[in-house]
Image (cartoon, rainbow, N blue to C red; front, side, top):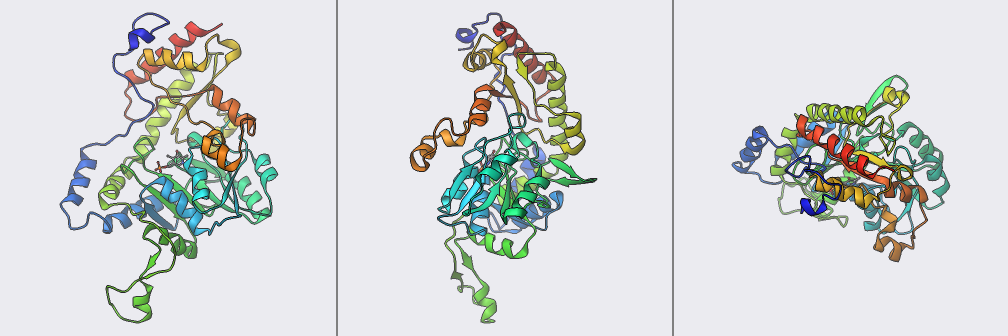
Length: 408
Ligand SMILES: *Cc1c(COP(=O)(O)O)cnc(C)c1O
């Protein structure tokens, strides 16, 4: 395959394919999982609370709810906030479909606000333009792990009495500074809730899994119901009878439970999070230095100002192709990189362009021109902690080789 695709000629820079992301699971992780497999509790055991505690303590949030996926976590937030038909929730079109689908699951309407073309994060003026009488919440997405300006989003939310749910699927390990204080994403100092995903491509993994972090006790209690069919056992306390068959279904929830097997992996992975983020930063810095003089591509633009107020988790390293300096299309460049055994990815097709969103919600091409133009130019290069020095150099060499071939 690679021979046929090697249209720019020469030997591929490497023999084995390198994908854009991959988990890092070591013997310690495996031992932790096996220990649960030998125990009495595969699900609904104590590993779940321990995982919740580990993430909540790391991020600095009061409460955590672990669920079966990041999607379930987003759905849980909309459930907890009581989003209902007629309600609108503003989010970014430059995200995975789960961010806005969570609103649809509750019968609400996702309203997109276009993005900032430099950061890929939601544009705050666009948020303000999209606020209506029906708007209930904003879901900012920390694209690629670069934190949104949460203090400013909080200001907008306060002004219009809106709730904020951070889709932090990319941003476990990211931090931002307000005044002279650093905040970890997930601490919810400028939001009501934040969600993480532990899919294997994310910053840590539990196989599948997700978590909601929040500080409000009442909201936590309400939200938690989604995980187990909307069932409460409060009746036992009310009747002062420890009758184990007694429970009440008070809400329509789901089975969104995560297993102890997954949580054991998650707890073990949390022990490596700092190392993972450090390695991600090291690779990103190497890319920034290696590509800095190439006019044919634009790099993630972290100005000196941003660097002083943001700590990037580098979930993704996204380059933008400058077509005025290139004679190839993105497809050409994508296939040429694949021929070198480097497999980039594209994050994301703007959500409003999916057939479901067009047909059911009436969105169309042209609605969010900045996100659409952004999408046309982007490629996510491989970046994950397990990459070795040679892997990183292979990516750099392949990009340089392919861009050299396609430059005008
Ligand atoms: C991965 C991801 C999700 C969904 O998480 P899952 O655990 O796969 O359900 C949601 N939003 C964003 C931005 C993501 O990248």
